[in-house]
Length: 239
Ligand SMILES: NC(=O)c1ccc[n+]([C@@H]2O[C@H](COP(=O)([O-])OP(=O)(O)OC[C@H]3O[C@@H](n4cnc5c(N)ncnc54)[C@H](OP(=O)(O)O)[C@@H]3O)[C@@H](O)[C@H]2O)c1
Image (cartoon, rainbow, N blue to C red):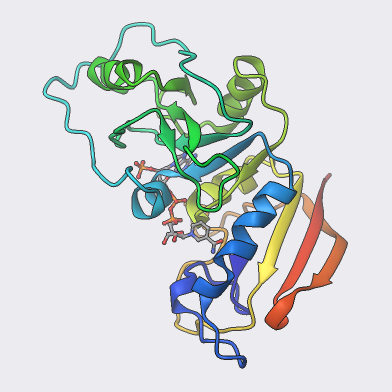
């Protein structure tokens, strides 16, 4: 993740650096870190996917919303060394092909896709995915059980090192579930400053919940990159 000094989520809103650069100038550095971290899967929240991923903006409108009977994991075409894992509980993303191009990807044709869904998605949506040879697995009835999703990614797809790449809502779900081992965070030398703007963790819970309760962070490395960006890595410890 990248955040402003006030922990905010939307890089387009950050003030420019004193060297006159903006977020766009650092995109390559940011995405190249996802390669350095050696992940075999990048988990992307449905909103981020539809806002940012090329070819994923359209929303699926089933003509028949009937859920699939006994939905089960489907393993489609898998060819890239890392997969784009779309956390899409309600099966909303329409795909044109079986790949999604992650910016600055080592795979010029894009990453193969694994959709993580709720078991109540329509049979028609699953058919849409199979038609495109897109893999899918389930995260419980409502698609929000990130523990079940991780189980499926390990067992059915053999993934071992997965990066949760935002946005804040999906990060918050993993935080609450206690499933984060490490935080890799680039602090951009800019400010957002507006009250109420989302942060890099946005667990959707009640006012009195503490989604990070029982967890502590240990700083494991810090590095100053060009233009005053600081790259911090923390290990998560759980009681
Ligand atoms: N600063 C950074 O490094 C960074 C990185 C990535 C993204 N971003 C920015 O983040 C913004 C989007 O972030 P966001 O926080 O609004 O959304 P998000 O985390 O990208 O997506 C949230 C959606 O994920 C789905 N979801 C899957 N599993 C879930 C679970 N267990 N609990 C809750 N939701 C789950 C839900 O889809 P449904 O609504 O369909 O149910 C939910 O609305 C974009 O503007 C993007 O540019 C910033």
